[in-house]
Length: 329
Image 1: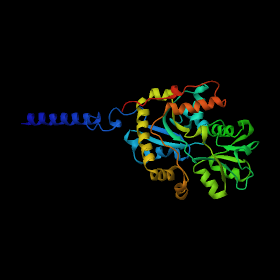
Image 2: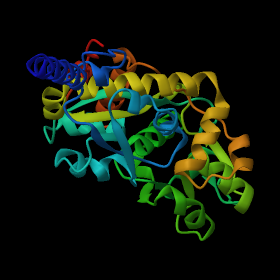
Image 3: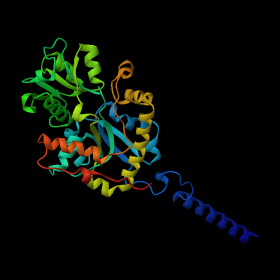
Image 4: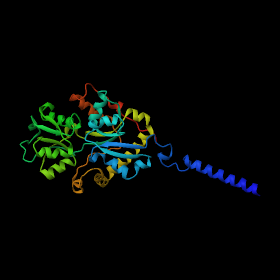
């Protein structure tokens, strides 16, 4: 009997070990991507501006979309896409929220190779504004000749859009002086006379108007730049090659966050309180731009073509080389 009990005990131990091994290898639940092969890199840092356009990132964090994909996503607030590019290229950031002008310039000039893995925003009427100080003698765009115009960074989507706007009013980019100012300090610089006009996205132009009495001179994206693609999410080409499952997982979660932003503006306003200092009253007045669940090559080509027109790049550039087709789930 003792021999029988010993054999039974050994059999039970073997069954238990087999069950534990199966569980450890994911032999049970196969619901999420995290449990079916996992991702190459779970921890991601996203560099992003504190603007409404990145609300889908916060929404995806809050609702657990990234976590469900096996990702631990954190964000780092940046001043501008161009300024943060070195951190992307060196791996300090794995994903960068950047205006498309900086992204196209990077690749077209051979400074770095990046892929667009998601779209952040397209301009909508009165979402971005060119503002002047209360009581300013500048009454029309043509009056900007010889004046200082504030932008968050030089040679980016702000300067490009203002250049296109100036052209429709008979001016050239060199007719104004572009001055760098971070968005949070722009209204103060305008009020102090350090600049005479300011390129401001939401909510900064709302704040400039309500707190300082600033006046909108013009919609920043109109005419040739109506519905202009503003920004997207970038990874380096090497990161995309080395981490295809990670990138695909990020894209799936981002799409879910964007879908929420598109269908429910209340979700956006809740998210804003997590990564910006926008108060609820200002958030309620904001005009949101266009969120997107996909990157459109034809739309993005508009950016490169306008950049060529104003000399941002030396020759025609095809954005197709920056596109990244999402991997299969």
